[in-house]
Figure 1 (cartoon, rainbow, N blue to C red):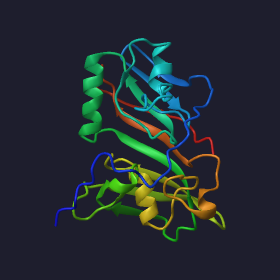
Figure 2: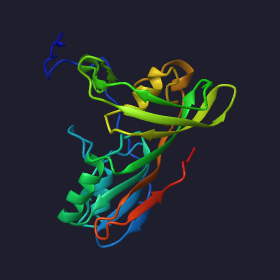
Figure 3: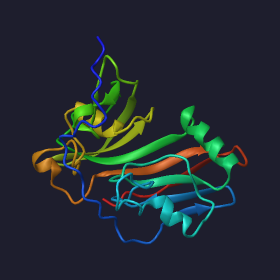
Figure 4: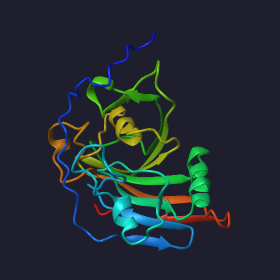
Length: 229
């Protein structure tokens, strides 16, 4: 069965978010002639938004100091952590293949609501857009794209669990929806969380480590940024 396509002008049931990017200095983790690695703050768009008032973003701030910075991948506005940018077209193409061919390995840290019983696990649930409620994504067994996430528990309290997440694919909102599907929504998620799980000053999701091959040498390199929560 084919799902009916919702027209592009269909309104979302999710209120439009108010964009108030943080006024913080750039945190450059690494810079050389080929790449730039930055610790993105939560609340800052990776690239300019389509609507008015959303031009302030990480790439524009970065280009103010490094005119040759080129986008390779993105993090959600509310997610913080390691992002890599290219400084040449050749490096951009090389790094793009690292992500497309899944040679890039990403590690995230998250605080999720509730106590997870198992110590580790694997999620294999296809994801697709929830068109009437954009930008929400949803588990869609019929029309969704394959999505896999490995996870392991780091610590537990009476009300929440700290986990490391290892996405094996790179779907939109993948970690957020996969944790929701497990019954443990990421704390502070203004799109998917409800009740007390929503009450936090930010989304508790951080890109902690990125490992890939350097575009100039082909050697594996890793970049880390500790979670601020």
